[in-house]
Structure formats: C-alpha cells, structure tokens
Image (tube, rainbow, N blue to C red; front, side, top):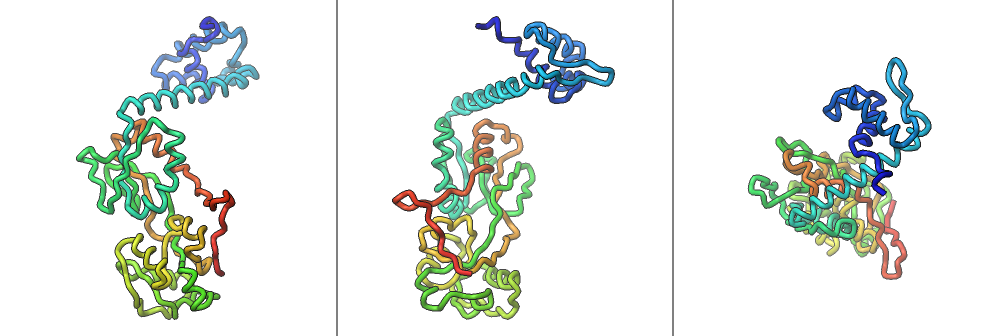
Length: 310
C-alpha cells in the first residue's frame, strides 16, 4: 500500500505551488530553493504518471489532472492538521479553564456547552464565573469572555456577540397594563434599571422618545438580578436578546416591541497573544465564534415560539 503514497514533501510542494501558482512563492513558504520545489513537483508527476502543471514563461498553471488532485490533497492536510491538534490538546491534561461573567455563563454559554463537549470529548471545560478582569499572569485562566470594547493590550481579542438590548416584561404585567403600541407607551410603565440608570434613557432616545426624564424604580448591578426582578413583575427591563432566548421561548418573558438598542460594548473572547495558538484554546475559539443560536424546544420536541408584542 505504501508504494502508492507519494512523498509528503512532494505533496506539500504541490499544494503550495498550486495555491500560489508560483514556484518561487512556494519555495519561500517552504523555506527551500525554487529548484528544490521544481524537483519535488517533477518527482510527484513521475510518481503519479500524470502532468500536474503546465510551465509557461511567466509561471505555472494547473492541468485538469492537477485541479482534480488538489482538493483531495488539501483535505488530507486539513485532516492531518486537525487530528494533530486534537492529539496535542488531549496530551495537555484535557482541561481548559474559561473565565466568563456570571450572566453570560448562565444565559448563553451553558445552554450551548453540550455541542462543544460532544464535538470535543477530549477537552474538559472548567467554567470560572467572575465579573473581574481575568488575570492571565497567574496561569490559572486559559481564556476569558468579557464585555467591553475589545481592545486589550497584550491579548488577542475576537468578537463573539453584539449586544442587542430589547424591552421585556413578565406576561402578567403586560396583561395588567396593556400591550404597548410604540416606545412612548412605555414611559408610564414601572422600570427595572441597571446600576447607572442610563439604559432606559438611551433606549428611549434611540427610538425617538425624548420625554423620559426621571428613571424611577429599582436598579441592580448584575444582569441576573435584573432578569429576576423582571420575571417577578417589578417592571419592564432591558436585557440582551441573545441572553434571554430561553425565557422568551418559554413565555416567561414577553418582548414588548421590536425596537432595540445596540450596546456600545460587545462580548469578546480574549487570551494572551503568546497562547493564542494553544490547541485547546484554538479549538474553543473556533467553536465559540461559530456557535449558532440554539433552537429552544419544549418537552415534545416542538420548537417554541417566543411571545412578542409590536
């Protein structure tokens, strides 16, 4: 069987030359001479018994055989790289410590963790819920998810989630006060506030309402407490749509209007620049940046529809 496998270096030279359509650029990438690349390409063609490239004055281009061969070679290298990364990750004790804010952990990350664990059983996630900035210098945290501007000196930062604030309330409160027809209707409602009490003012301004001046009502410095207060019927509140998908789907919360407010800050995945290529971190990064919104279903397996007004 081995006699049918071309030399690995020749395959690497073929893939690089096909990608660049240049022997010189392939040589630069592989840190060898153009002559060495040309020799490897010729040996590969001799091994296969077909011509993979046409040589012209200004460079090279793929033959039909070369174009047919390239996807399989690229896929093979991709599979080797992925398998190698997984082996390296499993050899590194299998634990990945992720620091996240408590609300992000409970409302967004935990409901989606199952898909990560099923795809990456060799990695055990250790979730550390904290609102404090992660101290990577101690070595106890591998990667963190933080709400901010995304600019952190010495850290790699990847955008995870834009925060889209929506107005929500408990169904009983909606039934008692009546469904709002526009943003101005919510001025007369009781409100639940964040700690700086600016959220509702910004939301009203963004939706063309200038009359809101007196932010009365309880305020909380933690989004989980804001959610609890809204669920308990203390008033309408503003929360990130992505974080309350379960409550909207179950009917515990009602989205009052389609009007939204985009937060100036977003959620970012951060890690030290020197650790960004760590296999476990790279696997987690690939997963979280591509994690899709989870469909929420009831006990019968039917997708639930969130109750929304407006």
